[in-house]
Length: 246
Image 1 (cartoon, rainbow, N blue to C red):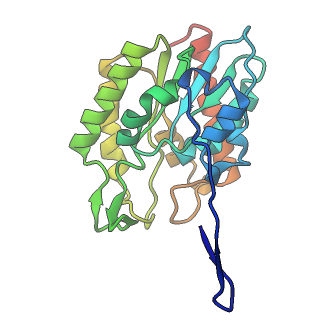
Image 2: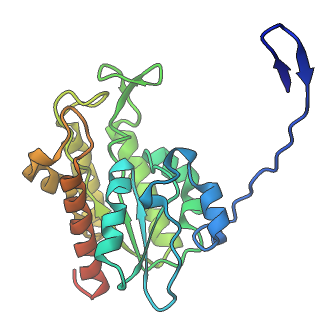
């Protein structure tokens, strides 16, 4: 490292660091490893608080994008004392990211339920890696279908968890890099896959359509009222499945 002062004088020094190796089997169990694995952007967000596991309770894993990050604390609150609720240590992003990170995200694979969603990041459009509604999709509908099929297959092959799919929430007019209505096409693709695999659906799309006042203007994200509503709906279907329903 070279440091230069205002007069042009400089000094050199060496900085060393230790790479952090993440053991997926300890990711959700070791507090230090959890915080070291959490994206720095989200440090301090309640959704990424370390969760101490109660061995007497079932374990739930939430996989999803920033929408799920928002409602994670409300799911935990609604299910407190009924199950341990975890989430992946980052924004789940698109389906390609899930396939790349799958083994890490599954952790110790001690899951009773996995609640998952992908869509908003697949259907977003980019030009020069920036949101632009005139650009190409991150993943076309065809690519989305292929990737989601593979994700479901991996979840069924590599875990014993009961699965819940969350449909993609509504895209409003003028949302950056997204076109209103395309989420419907992606949700239809996902629905066919889930029906084929007998996976129940947490219909977050219909919920967010029914409460337009909950959504921020020209933004895929939601006000506190909407985030709370989404979390409570997710918690309700998780609890119903834990109790043997659906």
